[in-house]
Image (cartoon, rainbow, N blue to C red):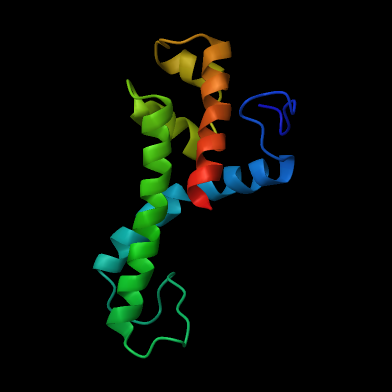
Length: 132
């Protein structure tokens, strides 16, 4: 998908906002892995970055976990709104940056290319509204 679309489109968002959201969504797998890692966190030497604002380490982990969970829920809800019939494949596509062709080569697509990319634009439009 081009990084900018016509301002006449009902799903138009500024180019740099689109790129910001696209890169934010690509962190989905990292969020997922961080949540799994937090279950087994035994030392302070982890990937999870902590601030010095919170005194209690357990509280800090809970806040970080809640933020990651909320981020994932926002992405999943937007996928469900855009493609209620198959949100899992759409989630995989937006979080891994898969194109229509890459998906069509491995799976039968129930929508046309034009419909797919219209849904893609709608996803980022919805995400823009939900993430504010």
